Length: 206
Image (tube, rainbow, N blue to C red; front, top):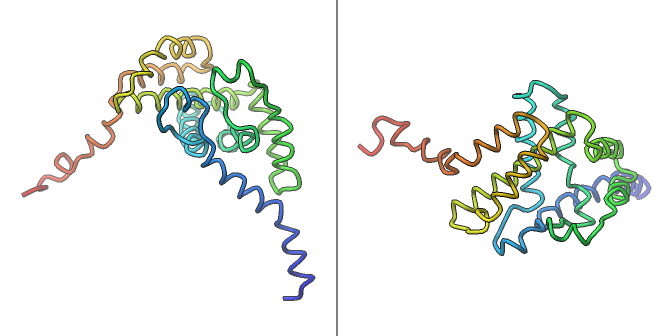
């Protein structure tokens, strides 16, 4: 391949590849509240995956919203944090992040530059898709708190009142509020305990 062709190919994909490396760096971005919990919690990238599933579940129960838009929004809702990091509920009292500028710079000259409109929509909270994704963003915290509680962490119990306030005042959809209630009661281990081979395979262990 001629050097000029190689150069043009590199230039063509340069910003897209840089974006992919930047997205990958979300695995190294710790959630801000890790400082207060003093234990491992999901990274930004791990959090994003479950938010996508949660948002789809909410949308299907609500029977509203464009699923493609919801997935794009959930996929990118924390993208700015590759540059501004994630801040906890306490840190946000003192720190203001220029997330709009971060997104503009992250997506500039990439094939996904139009995603800035999706992210802007999410931040405005005006569309039903934005409200669903924000509900999913909030609920993932409650799911993780239940997981931490399962491991014997004491702090989730101290946050119950605050999380209930968020349930009552910050969640947008009826489905999200019902999910919040269910999260408080479900056994986080039931998904694998009830799939035990001794229940599923009649002759297991014989």
